Structure formats: structure tokens, C-alpha cells
Image (cartoon, rainbow, N blue to C red; front, side, top):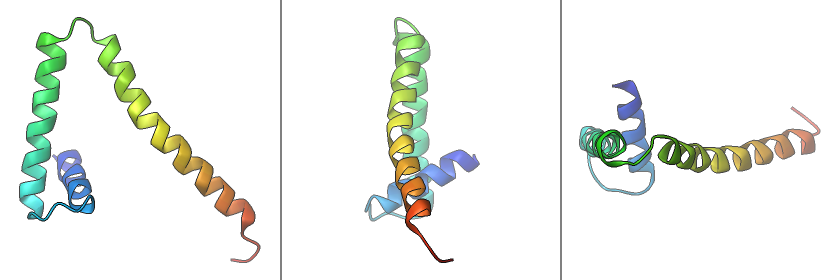
Length: 77
């Protein structure tokens, strides 16, 4: 439940003008549909799982690179 509530907050940061509980509900519906698709309609689990990891990994890797560059360029606290 906390994960859905937090990812609903992500929808709000994307600029969607709805209430926070409504954003959590929309995100819950999206996650439920995605889960049903992977479990019942996907040919294999590995393909969608790898796509999920790539989708998650690329922004995290770029964020980590920016964070490391920021840490190394700072000279004062």
C-alpha cells in the first residue's frame, strides 16, 4: 500500500491535477492491469521482467552519475 501511495505521488509530480488519493487509485489500477497482463497473457515472465529492470535501471544509472559528479565537483560543504 505504501508503494502505491508513493508512486501516486509520482503521478502528481508529473503535473497531473488530481487529489493524492485519486492518484494512488489510478496508480493501483495501472499496477493491477500490468500484473494481470504479465501473469495471464504474457508468453514468458523473463521478457517483461527484463524490460522493467531496463526501464528502472536507465534513469537510476543517470541519476547516480549526476549525483557522483555533483559530489566530486563540490569543494565546500
